[in-house]
Image (cartoon, rainbow over all chains, first blue to last red; front, top):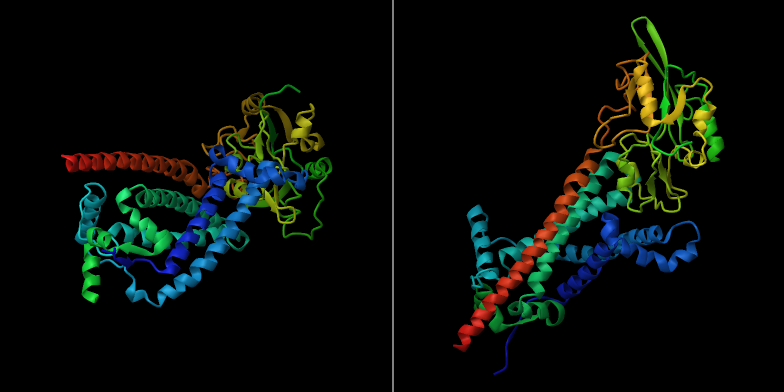
Length: 232
Length: 264
């Protein structure tokens, strides 16, 4: 019997996610030496050393590396904008079809969702999830809001002459807070996506095929499975 | 001159507003003076600039029938805790044993984090060179046994230079009120010290000198980032990684249990 597959992600989603990873890696690598030179200064040295002879005495290798890191950081922001702005605008046209809206709007609903997450990720049970569980929905919202947060504060820092010193200081603090929240969120996201063998089909779907085996959907996202069956 | 912590002490009581210090600073550091018009006050240029590292400020103050003309020398305060140095990601700001806080131009990347961190609003960014400039306390002179240029040029001893504790003790014993030897936890103490008898009680009064000699110099956002956001951020990141490792172990043990049960 041939295995049946269900489409989970569109080609556009796969493409955007892939570039989100590239640009996020660039943001982290170039931001880390600025936030903690003691631990991540080696990144600046690695970036600056090869070009340091070209710049004579204008910069030390380390400072040149930081300068290069800052420019890569900014160019990455432009690069990411070219990917996510058109995608985000297109998504707005199908806002009603988004599958990241909560199923219900109450505190008890949220606590039930969190309980289901604990069942799924800690007790290894199979709650009745739809296409996305509460954790995946919250992560998607947090990522979207986080991107806007980092752009808003980052643009103030980039074009600081257009703002008051008090605004840059606040933007810098908020950018730092955003950095830590992003690192923590990404650590959890990457871990859950890659380190749980039972969830590997999701990884294949997000990076390669865009599809999930029907049996996986039936077991891990039963409510979504039922919905798909009802639509057939 | 012996090594050790030094101070430049400025007393407005003896200052005659001749600006010899301002000129000496330009001459020694080869910084181009600004061509300016008369500002509303006699302060000229009206503020610190990338090439103007010290400014004599002229301020008119009066109470009732009395009238005073205050002269105030403004420049980097050379803080012992140097928030600018702590904020600099390039390690371009050095705090010397003498107390001088010096920007190394070959290391400065023009990020202006030092400008954000300075509560005294001193470092000045030059968009042409993409670097930040300020008073160096004439570290090149100090290291060669000379006094700072501004001190050498002062004709009235309104500026004096010497060992920190000795100088402060001497002036305090003579009845001067001092600003700088113990300011707050953000800046520590400043190596530019201000002393007055004539305006005792007015050093930190904003009408007199207090617009620059702040009672509690601090940048709240910078202070919050440094003392809360970063330590808490790194701690939470570490805890998250430990938690994920714990989850990995838990998940593995559950899988092993399942395999065992399957085999039975």
